[in-house]
Image (cartoon, rainbow, N blue to C red):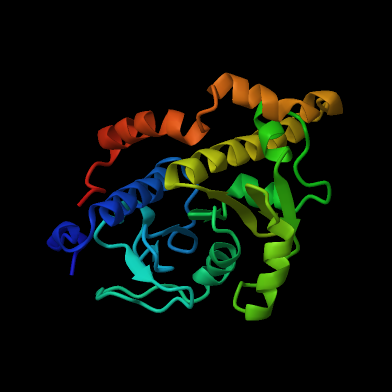
Length: 255
């Protein structure tokens, strides 16, 4: 059954439908920005309400095909809790379920295998303070060592420990992870994470001696970001424009 053959909008609450539309948009924007890895990464979002239910991508569907209706609703164990013709990747939700269970504020968890992100995750020093884009990331960044494909339940406590209360997690030799109060916040956080990694790889490729940003500037970056955004999250500021861009290039996600 094609995603366009079915719409769930009449069957779910307005709050769930809004979450579905924004998460589907985040998937399509991830493809538009070139951060997808065929069908092998995930963005998950909690469904508003008292139940710990989550939305995640249908296994085998490309990110630029995902619609609000095609997203699969599951519980913390990765079991489907509503009818869906689609399955999910059992390995994919190991990381996401660990974060969702430990962080009530992590309503959206985004994980990518972008080329730049994996390249920097393989560098011993990790992310370096080389750009303005890197500073906000470095102010809230953890690292998690690679333990193989995320299949083992016993990895979850270590992953949660390494993320801590941070917004960003670099998965060594694996990729990038962000959390946010919404798909908008998680996506825009990933934009800066990915940009910082891309800039680092290109700066290193230039062959010249690198010039890191001084620690006192890094120490004050949180207050500077709050001033620039006037207390509004970067996700909330950028999301309407991102949706307009998506509507121009790949509409249909709200189906």
